[in-house]
Amino acid sequence: MRQAICFALLCSLVLSFTTGCSQAPRITYYSFESTAKPAAVTPPTAVAKKERPSVSLESVTVPELVDRLQLVQRINAARIDILEFHRWAEPLKSGIARRLADNLSQALESDRVSIYPHNIGSDAEYRVFVDFHCFEFDGSAVTVDAQWGIRSRHDGRLREGRVQSRLPTGTEGYEAAVTTFGRALAAVSDAISRSLQSEWAASSGENKSLPKTNLTPLNLPL
Image (cartoon, rainbow, N blue to C red; front, side, top):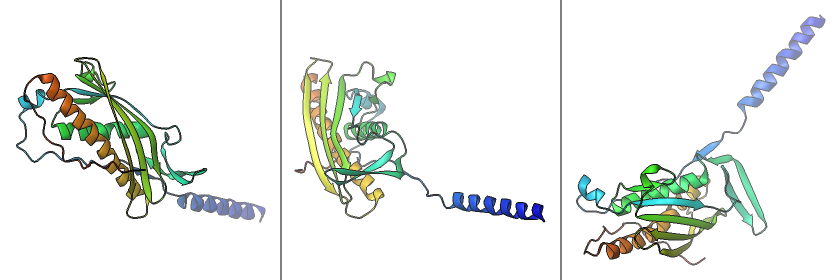
Protein backbone atom coordinates (compact mmCIF):
# COMPACT_ATOMS: atom_id res chain seq x y z
CA MET A 1 0.00 0.00 0.00
CA ARG A 2 2.79 2.40 0.97
CA GLN A 3 4.62 1.65 -2.28
CA ALA A 4 1.50 2.40 -4.31
CA ILE A 5 1.06 5.72 -2.56
CA CYS A 6 4.72 6.65 -3.16
CA PHE A 7 4.44 5.66 -6.80
CA ALA A 8 1.30 7.78 -7.20
CA LEU A 9 3.01 10.79 -5.60
CA LEU A 10 6.04 10.36 -7.86
CA CYS A 11 3.85 10.23 -10.96
CA SER A 12 2.04 13.35 -9.80
CA LEU A 13 5.32 15.22 -9.31
CA VAL A 14 6.61 14.17 -12.73
CA LEU A 15 3.35 15.22 -14.37
CA SER A 16 3.42 18.60 -12.62
CA PHE A 17 7.04 19.15 -13.69
CA THR A 18 6.44 18.29 -17.33
CA THR A 19 3.28 20.40 -17.43
CA GLY A 20 5.15 23.36 -15.98
CA CYS A 21 7.93 23.00 -18.53
CA SER A 22 5.48 22.81 -21.42
CA GLN A 23 3.92 26.10 -20.32
CA ALA A 24 7.21 28.01 -20.09
CA PRO A 25 7.09 31.29 -22.07
CA ARG A 26 8.50 31.07 -25.57
CA ILE A 27 11.47 33.32 -26.40
CA THR A 28 11.06 35.33 -29.61
CA TYR A 29 14.17 36.46 -31.50
CA TYR A 30 14.44 39.51 -33.78
CA SER A 31 16.84 40.82 -36.42
CA PHE A 32 16.92 43.89 -38.63
CA GLU A 33 15.45 43.70 -42.10
CA SER A 34 17.21 45.30 -45.04
CA THR A 35 15.61 48.62 -45.97
CA ALA A 36 18.05 49.83 -48.62
CA LYS A 37 17.27 49.27 -52.29
CA PRO A 38 19.75 49.38 -55.16
CA ALA A 39 19.52 52.45 -57.37
CA ALA A 40 17.41 51.97 -60.48
CA VAL A 41 20.33 51.92 -62.90
CA THR A 42 22.09 49.30 -64.94
CA PRO A 43 23.87 46.95 -62.51
CA PRO A 44 27.61 47.68 -62.46
CA THR A 45 29.98 45.10 -63.80
CA ALA A 46 32.49 43.35 -61.52
CA VAL A 47 35.18 45.72 -62.78
CA ALA A 48 33.01 48.75 -62.10
CA LYS A 49 32.30 47.55 -58.57
CA LYS A 50 36.02 47.35 -57.87
CA GLU A 51 36.34 51.00 -58.85
CA ARG A 52 33.99 51.99 -56.04
CA PRO A 53 35.62 53.23 -52.84
CA SER A 54 36.54 50.63 -50.24
CA VAL A 55 34.87 51.25 -46.88
CA SER A 56 35.49 49.68 -43.50
CA LEU A 57 32.96 50.05 -40.71
CA GLU A 58 35.45 50.24 -37.87
CA SER A 59 33.24 50.47 -34.80
CA VAL A 60 29.67 50.78 -33.58
CA THR A 61 28.87 51.72 -29.98
CA VAL A 62 25.53 51.79 -28.17
CA PRO A 63 24.59 52.86 -24.63
CA GLU A 64 25.21 50.14 -22.03
CA LEU A 65 21.54 50.40 -21.10
CA VAL A 66 20.54 48.64 -24.33
CA ASP A 67 23.75 46.70 -24.99
CA ARG A 68 22.24 43.34 -24.13
CA LEU A 69 20.48 40.46 -25.88
CA GLN A 70 17.08 41.38 -24.45
CA LEU A 71 14.99 44.14 -26.01
CA VAL A 72 14.59 47.13 -23.72
CA GLN A 73 11.46 49.27 -23.46
CA ARG A 74 11.45 52.67 -21.78
CA ILE A 75 8.40 53.14 -19.57
CA ASN A 76 9.15 56.66 -18.38
CA ALA A 77 12.12 58.91 -17.67
CA ALA A 78 13.16 56.84 -14.65
CA ARG A 79 12.01 53.31 -15.52
CA ILE A 80 12.76 50.69 -18.15
CA ASP A 81 11.65 47.11 -18.75
CA ILE A 82 14.10 44.44 -19.86
CA LEU A 83 12.06 42.06 -22.01
CA GLU A 84 13.42 38.66 -21.07
CA PHE A 85 11.36 36.77 -23.66
CA HIS A 86 12.00 39.14 -26.58
CA ARG A 87 15.63 39.08 -27.66
CA TRP A 88 17.96 40.07 -30.48
CA ALA A 89 19.11 37.14 -32.59
CA GLU A 90 22.70 38.41 -32.29
CA PRO A 91 24.53 40.99 -30.16
CA LEU A 92 22.91 44.36 -30.80
CA LYS A 93 26.12 46.08 -31.92
CA SER A 94 26.82 43.26 -34.38
CA GLY A 95 23.32 43.46 -35.81
CA ILE A 96 23.53 47.23 -36.23
CA ALA A 97 26.95 47.03 -37.86
CA ARG A 98 25.79 44.33 -40.27
CA ARG A 99 22.71 46.32 -41.27
CA LEU A 100 24.66 49.56 -41.74
CA ALA A 101 27.28 47.79 -43.84
CA ASP A 102 24.64 46.11 -45.98
CA ASN A 103 22.82 49.41 -46.50
CA LEU A 104 26.07 51.17 -47.47
CA SER A 105 27.02 48.38 -49.86
CA GLN A 106 23.68 48.70 -51.66
CA ALA A 107 23.61 52.50 -51.63
CA LEU A 108 27.16 52.74 -53.03
CA GLU A 109 26.66 49.75 -55.35
CA SER A 110 29.91 48.41 -53.99
CA ASP A 111 31.04 45.01 -52.80
CA ARG A 112 33.98 46.66 -51.02
CA VAL A 113 32.21 47.45 -47.75
CA SER A 114 33.44 45.42 -44.78
CA ILE A 115 33.10 45.31 -41.01
CA TYR A 116 36.16 45.46 -38.77
CA PRO A 117 38.04 43.25 -37.91
CA HIS A 118 37.52 41.43 -41.21
CA ASN A 119 40.86 41.50 -43.01
CA ILE A 120 39.32 42.59 -46.31
CA GLY A 121 38.90 46.10 -44.91
CA SER A 122 42.37 46.47 -43.39
CA ASP A 123 43.49 48.88 -46.13
CA ALA A 124 40.18 50.59 -46.83
CA GLU A 125 40.10 54.07 -48.33
CA TYR A 126 37.48 55.20 -45.84
CA ARG A 127 37.01 54.15 -42.23
CA VAL A 128 33.61 54.75 -40.64
CA PHE A 129 32.82 55.09 -36.93
CA VAL A 130 29.29 55.28 -35.49
CA ASP A 131 28.37 56.12 -31.89
CA PHE A 132 24.74 55.77 -30.86
CA HIS A 133 23.91 58.10 -27.99
CA CYS A 134 20.33 56.81 -27.91
CA PHE A 135 18.70 53.65 -29.28
CA GLU A 136 15.37 53.32 -27.48
CA PHE A 137 11.79 52.12 -27.82
CA ASP A 138 9.01 53.53 -25.61
CA GLY A 139 6.03 51.47 -26.72
CA SER A 140 4.82 53.74 -29.51
CA ALA A 141 7.98 55.13 -31.14
CA VAL A 142 11.71 54.56 -31.42
CA THR A 143 14.29 57.25 -30.78
CA VAL A 144 17.73 57.10 -32.37
CA ASP A 145 20.57 59.56 -31.96
CA ALA A 146 23.68 58.59 -33.92
CA GLN A 147 26.94 60.50 -34.37
CA TRP A 148 29.18 59.26 -37.15
CA GLY A 149 32.63 59.99 -38.49
CA ILE A 150 34.50 59.17 -41.70
CA ARG A 151 38.28 59.15 -41.83
CA SER A 152 39.85 59.24 -45.28
CA ARG A 153 43.07 57.44 -46.06
CA HIS A 154 43.92 60.22 -48.52
CA ASP A 155 44.25 63.11 -46.06
CA GLY A 156 43.59 61.61 -42.63
CA ARG A 157 40.88 64.15 -41.83
CA LEU A 158 37.80 63.18 -39.87
CA ARG A 159 34.42 64.26 -41.27
CA GLU A 160 31.56 64.08 -38.80
CA GLY A 161 27.78 64.18 -38.86
CA ARG A 162 24.78 63.38 -36.71
CA VAL A 163 21.33 61.90 -37.29
CA GLN A 164 18.56 62.28 -34.72
CA SER A 165 15.14 60.76 -35.31
CA ARG A 166 12.00 59.79 -33.48
CA LEU A 167 9.76 57.52 -35.54
CA PRO A 168 6.35 56.14 -34.58
CA THR A 169 6.04 52.39 -34.89
CA GLY A 170 2.55 52.69 -36.39
CA THR A 171 1.29 49.52 -34.75
CA GLU A 172 1.77 47.87 -31.38
CA GLY A 173 4.20 45.03 -30.82
CA TYR A 174 7.90 44.46 -30.68
CA GLU A 175 8.19 43.34 -34.30
CA ALA A 176 6.93 46.76 -35.38
CA ALA A 177 9.52 48.37 -33.10
CA VAL A 178 12.34 46.35 -34.69
CA THR A 179 11.12 47.28 -38.17
CA THR A 180 11.08 50.95 -37.17
CA PHE A 181 14.61 50.67 -35.79
CA GLY A 182 15.56 49.42 -39.25
CA ARG A 183 14.08 52.55 -40.81
CA ALA A 184 16.09 54.71 -38.42
CA LEU A 185 19.27 52.81 -39.33
CA ALA A 186 18.47 53.47 -42.99
CA ALA A 187 18.53 57.20 -42.26
CA VAL A 188 21.95 56.86 -40.63
CA SER A 189 23.22 54.84 -43.60
CA ASP A 190 21.86 57.44 -46.00
CA ALA A 191 23.72 60.29 -44.28
CA ILE A 192 26.97 58.33 -44.26
CA SER A 193 26.65 57.22 -47.88
CA ARG A 194 26.02 60.78 -49.06
CA SER A 195 29.15 61.97 -47.30
CA LEU A 196 31.16 59.08 -48.74
CA GLN A 197 29.94 59.93 -52.23
CA SER A 198 31.02 63.53 -51.80
CA GLU A 199 34.41 62.59 -50.36
CA TRP A 200 35.13 60.02 -53.07
CA ALA A 201 34.17 62.40 -55.88
CA ALA A 202 36.40 65.14 -54.42
CA SER A 203 39.41 62.89 -53.83
CA SER A 204 39.23 61.22 -57.25
CA GLY A 205 39.89 64.52 -59.02
CA GLU A 206 37.57 63.37 -61.76
CA ASN A 207 33.90 63.61 -62.53
CA LYS A 208 33.10 60.27 -60.93
CA SER A 209 29.74 60.15 -59.27
CA LEU A 210 28.32 57.29 -57.27
CA PRO A 211 24.68 56.34 -57.74
CA LYS A 212 22.12 58.27 -55.74
CA THR A 213 20.82 56.27 -52.84
CA ASN A 214 17.15 55.36 -52.54
CA LEU A 215 17.24 55.55 -48.76
CA THR A 216 14.85 58.18 -47.45
CA PRO A 217 16.33 60.65 -44.90
CA LEU A 218 14.49 60.58 -41.61
CA ASN A 219 16.18 63.38 -39.69
CA LEU A 220 13.27 64.33 -37.50
CA PRO A 221 13.44 66.61 -34.45
CA LEU A 222 13.48 64.87 -31.11
